[in-house]
Image (tube, rainbow, N blue to C red; front, side, top):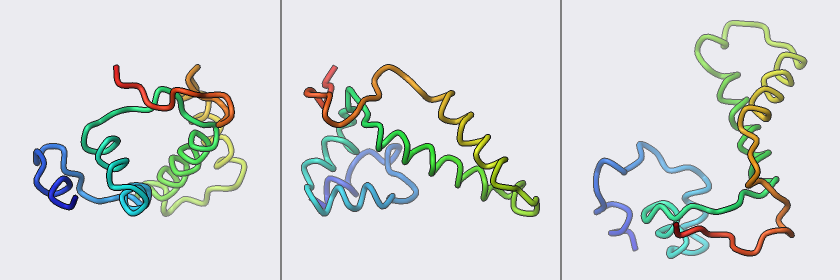
Length: 106
């Protein structure tokens, strides 16, 4: 399976592997291949996944070089989180219990 990761088209090779990518590969190499190599996207996104991405987005914003020297209070962090939440919300976000066709091949 490692050849699927390292012998693929170099333009799609990431500079790093996220925890989610490594964990996905450890749990199921085929899942890793389908999602990260073949690019099969999920039709729906769970609310838990959506929320996690917003938290990561705010942490990335918080630790940007231009913000490192600033004193940023909790209210400002919450405002950034709310902004990111609203900007990225879409109709394909749902609770895990409400979707059946998790992967979309179209």
